[in-house]
Amino acid sequence: MMTALTRQVIHKNELVDKTASELPLVALYQNALPAKRTGPLYGAFPYPTKISPETIALYIAAHTKPGATIFDGFAGSGTTGLAALLCENPSEDLRNEAARLGLRVEWGARDAVLYELGALGAFIGKTLTNPPDAEEFQRAADHTLNEVEKEFGWIYRADDLNGKRGAIRHIVWSDVVRCPSCQLAATLWDSCVSLGPARIESQFTCPFCTHMTTLDTVERITDQFSDELTGEIVERRVRRIARIYGITGKKRWSRAPTNSDLELLDQVAQEQIPECVPNLIIPWGDLYRSGYHCGMSRIHHFYTRRNLIAFSRLWERASTFQGALGDAIRFWLLSYNASHATIMTRVVAKSGQKDLVVTSAQPGVLYVSGLPVEKNLFHGLRRKLSTIANAFGTIHGRQGNVSVHQKSSCVVDLPDSSIDYVFTDPPFGGNIPYAEISLLNDAWLGQFTNNTEEVIISGSQNKTIADYQQLMTATLSEVNRILKPDGKATLVFHSASADIWNALQAAYSDARLNVEYAGVLDKKQGSFKQVTTNGAVRGDPVLLLGKNPVPDKQSEDNVWIVAEKLNRAALKLGPSEQTAERLYSRFVNHFLENHQKVPLNASEFYRWHGAQQTAGVVCAGR
Image 1 (cartoon, rainbow, N blue to C red):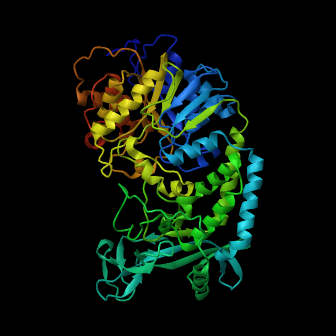
Image 2 (cartoon, rainbow, N blue to C red; image 1 turned 135 degrees about the vertical axis):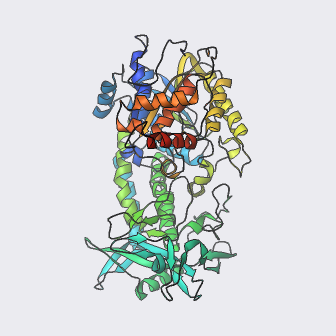
Image 3 (cartoon, helix red, strand yellow; image 1 turned 90 degrees about the vertical axis):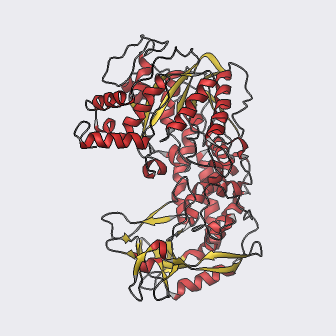
């Protein structure tokens, strides 16, 4: 089937029929464009599903000229705005990538208008795209950290194995469980964890009576405590310190807890909690789990008392700075907050490692492990400082104008035909409830998200696929309205559900937009849900939408003929194109390009692919 632009692009080893003016764009959509998750701009602030600004800059530069205005109605943490700014004076790597792809690019400043419903995303976007001078920021942040650490550094003190004074790097806490056989209380650490090599067993072994059973049959012990901030009696899981990891001078060490560690906890318990701590009831939604969220009804329940004091003292000092500098200090603190300052930080056992490896909170969820980690905030924030200063230094002083608005994109306050190009990465159905996931940082900002027009599928918000489609139609109709007659919109999306793909297709069709090209964005590290969710899609399909009339529909293509053709074509390409996940992205693209409904969920396609592989038909060595 041919579109109005006279093209046929199914795979990069096949014939491409294009006019000369279109050929430079083929590389953006025909090949799997790499999107690395590295660099100071990407690493400055953790935010779900974001795309590297350098990759977006390639799309912007290929589709626009200097002076153009770009719009993103689902701006997230502002990466489209950063990308527009990068076009002014691109790095050598960015220039080389454009040359490698054969793109006809004219570098120069572009402007951007960003709409983001979420309070946190809008704050990140505003701060990153309009940062203060990097050196001024670094001096202010260093001073803030030094002053607070001078006064409160004692809360992280710890003695090494020889009794020499050092500092805590991190502490692994452990849930306390009750053995169903002997009824004695044991820590999860003592019953499931071993070191040298490191292992976390999925089976409980009682350290007292050696009774063995599955973890889901073991009772987690809780107690009642008086919440100092509210005066309420709250139930919570009982946790004990399992292991201390510290540093003395330059020497790192670890040991079991001692009486001195418990005495320090008693001293911390006497320290007053600052008034700036948000005393907010959590409006739980889709992410609540009755087990590991037991007793966690307020924001401060996500912190150990020690880290709550450390963070809030730093937050107090941030208020002494005004304007962009004050926002930058808060940005730096929040960049470490939810992922590292809370008890959502965790340990994992990696193959070949003698000890457990500390990692941050899982993105896209509010999961609390049975072995939560308490990090030294002062050490962590000092490490994070250079990354953020480098990010600010990369952007500060650029000429492009980026305006960020905390608004719904269902109604956009821009004139008709005023935007040259749109790049956007909308929510993928019910994958992530962004407003709920951002609550921990929103609370400190004192700014919250009105989720009425949050474009997601949500049980707690009573939003169905039909509601999602309706909201997406409203936003894409605004895209159509504000785009210039020859303007284009690039939309990045992924889903394992054919129903969600078809809702998206109906939304852009009802908005009088149609697919002109379809490609794949090759993220070098998948998001947490892309890596772990059953049937997840690795490599996000990328759709170029335009205002050209949709051609008359022809008969539906045979599902299995299309799947087999893509499989066989992949044999002539590299291993990355031969995976079931990449093939499903190509499969989706085929049907969207040909204006047909997506007929299969990812899980159905993967089963078919697995059967074909077993039979020796396709892609050995997946």
